[in-house]
Image 1 (cartoon, one colour):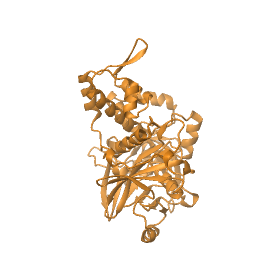
Image 2 (image 1 turned 45 degrees about the vertical axis):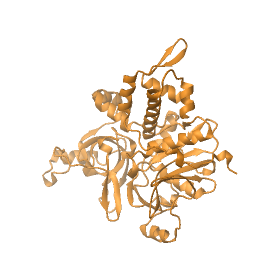
Image 3 (image 1 turned 60 degrees about the vertical axis):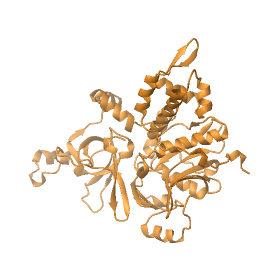
Image 4 (image 1 turned 180 degrees about the vertical axis):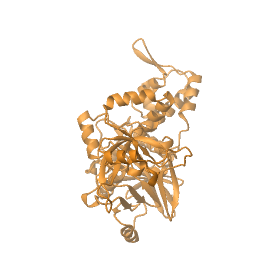
Length: 439
């Protein structure tokens, strides 16, 4: 993630709070209302003339990093026990992903920067021209909205209208308090809850801390309710059958949707297997992430959904989950590919994984090698291999066929740019029988 979305973990009693960092800035712009009684008459008139702000208004907003960023007002609501004209606003930071959307107070907005609504296509083009090449590349890599390629314009508008406001602001899961990223369609009785408390073992969720404490005294689970199919050091992977553990599967989907934007929430989890990765200690096995896959996929999908929880990101777990899904495909004797659309972070992770795996093979291999042979060795679908090698400019089309051009110096340069590969899957520790062979 980019600097605006860099998370930190701070102590909060016995629970660690996981949120975006807010470094101080000596060159901050003053708040629009910071002058108090000395506020000019012109500013007061302007404030009264445009307040409350309309939905769709564009304005500069002071974020938690102390700097001002352009936002669009998505929704507004009256404050309770306040003046009738006082509102707070749900805003989208237009430079960044929707996961940073939040409710803000009027004091955080620079009302002198209020803009009338303009045509968004024209505005986006102007904004793009104003960015330096480095800025645009950084935003493209870290905050681009990916994952809705299969939605047409009308469906995308409907999706964003329905999910435009986060309904749950934070969750408590184990020793972490985590800020959520997106809307998740929890049952109606949780509509008035800004924070939910999850049991980290069975994933039941509650409105109050006291309810969680009572639940934890009764819950006898210390790991996901499935078969442990992998253990290496403190890492364990559990396979959970959605049909046998329906409530757990549904709760996992509710939880995951808080951190995944354009993903369908499956209420019928019977058709899916969930692979839950855990860090284990003397207190139990604590979920760090998971992926799911269909029991029978006609499209050769070996992964339907993937998530590393925010407190565990940037530790190589995402790459581990992807590698694990391909190891299962090898055990099945199939090639696999992730279900589309991919989230923005998912797409980056897959591109990195494909790049490293293919470059490692090309660097070690002597003589010619075909895309079919690469696919057989890695269980990566031929189309994914082709697009990856094309993006690295390692493939050419000659005499009616694709030819891989693996110059050692070029491979070394790409390997260096790809970075470290993350945690390795020790295949000798994987004890697993493909679903079709289970009785």
